[in-house]
Image 1 (cartoon, helix red, strand yellow):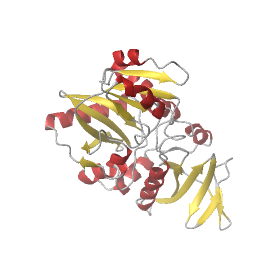
Image 2 (cartoon, one colour):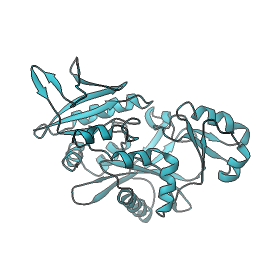
Image 3 (cartoon, rainbow, N blue to C red):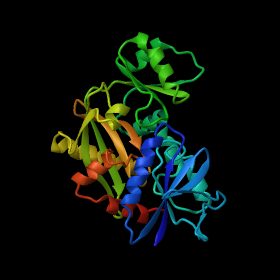
Image 4 (cartoon, helix red, strand yellow):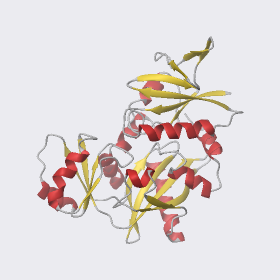
Length: 321
C-alpha cells in the first residue's frame, strides 16, 4: 500500500478548482493500492486535512503524525493548479526529498507556465501558434507597435495565470491599455496575442505505461466572447466530446498533441488547447496540471474514451519517476 499526498491549495486564483480536483483524486484512488491524504499548501505551509482534523506537516521531511504513527509519502499527486506547482517552484522541494510526483519537472513546468516562452519554443519545434507580443510591468505601453505586431481583434492575458483569469478580448486600440492593466492584476508580464477565429478544441494526453495516448477531443462553444472563467466553471459554455470536426482533423490534433507531449518532455496527465482556423490547429496553451473536478474537461474525455478515473490515476502514479 503506497501513501499518496494529494497536493492542493496554493495561493493563486485557481485555489477553489484545485480543492475540487484533489477531492476527485481522493474519491477515485484504488483503495487496494493507495492510501490518499489531502495535503493543503497555503502561504508556504503544508497541512494534512483528515476528516475534520488539520495536522501540520514537518517541512524538513514531508511527514506528519497521526494517532502516534509517523506518516510519510511514497508519491505526490499534483492537484495544485497555478503556482507553486504549475510553474515549477515546488518540484525541487520534492526532488530534494526523493519523493516522486505526477507532474512535469521544474524546468518543463516553468517553461509551459510562461505562455510567451512556451509558444516561442513550440514555434521553434515547428508547431503553429498565434503571433504574440510580450509586455513587462514598468515598460511604456506602445499600443501602435502592439497592434502592428498582432492585429485586431487580439487577446490580452496574464503571461502566467490559469483558468482564464485576467483575459480580455480587445477589438479597438483604445481598449488595449485598460485590458493590459486588468491583466497586470494577475501577473507582471502580459501576453498580447493575435485573435485566431475558429473552432476551440482541447485534447487530453497521458502516458499509459506503454505509449503516449491522446484522449477524445472536446469542442468548446462559449456563450461569452471566449472561453473565460465563467464559461469554464459556471456553465456558460457547451462542451462537446467528441468534437464536431472531421475524422482527419481529429487524428491530426491528437497526433499533434502526442508530438507536443514528446517534444516538450511532458509527464503525467496534460491537456493541450487549440483553435482550428482554416483547417490548421493553432496551439493556444499547454496545461501540465489540468482541472480534474467533475466539470473539468479531462474527466469528460475519459468518460467518452470509456476509461475510468481510477485506472488513469493508477497509471499516472505507477509511472512516476
